[in-house]
Image 1 (cartoon, rainbow, N blue to C red):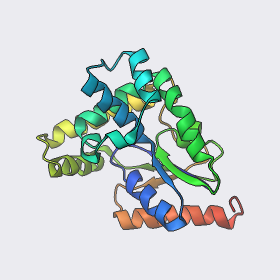
Image 2: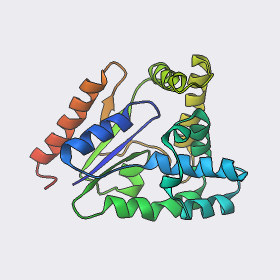
Image 3: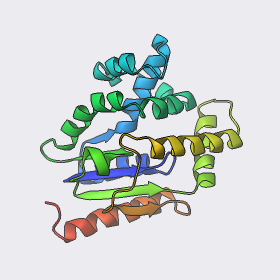
Length: 212
């Protein structure tokens, strides 16, 4: 069984993905971490975020064990990820890694922004997780403040709007809800309720005999 979970930043898709992966015993890949890692590595090496060649080289040689979670979850890492993710050659460099993970024997769960449309269009279950910008902004702001970052709620909301526009407007693999994906709107949901709704969608797919 392949489960594809896509959606916007701070919508809750990452938490939902982890919970579902644990429940169904599936290996999980947070594909956003790949792009964050490329961005962080580029900043560490002094590589401009618009230099496609060097960035693609970084992507091809990427080793996530070289990074700590805190640096990958920073606001700067998020902004860098959105920039490098818009570069076709970087996406291509990471495509095979993601595709191989998605098609591994026994199934897998991946979350990102183009899993159901590009990486695993044949996924058995596709979810699109979203919430309104003010709610997502507050969630992300609290996360960043918790990590000790000095940022205002208004700044976070503006950054989310910019990232949404960049992710959805890029020419190569734009972030988009697959035609056969199920929408999970978490604006007014607790994370427990959101997970339950997502799990119900998976169970519905199983009941229809889409998966084994």
